[in-house]
Image (cartoon, rainbow, N blue to C red; front, side, top):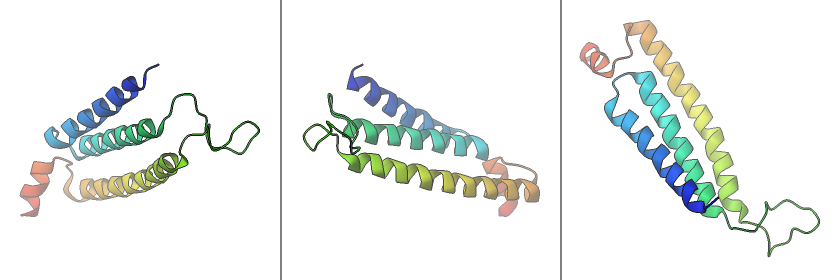
Length: 115
């Protein structure tokens, strides 16, 4: 499979998530859009670090510095996934508290009630 497919998929996920963040009015839909956008960015970072014909940088026989991919993008994406899960959990907690307090997750309604 061509690497361009991964770039196309990553950009598509980023744009779908951006659409949800900018257009949707429900807080949960916005959070789902942020998660989709985050997945697209992670896929883009992994795709950039991919080199055809090379393998993961795991210590085993036959894998050396000349035939392994760069481990930095992989480490960054693993860190981003952990941070993303934590921030999504925090955002969902805030959304639950907002719903319990105001009985709505509509952003426009929450702004009207707050002000």
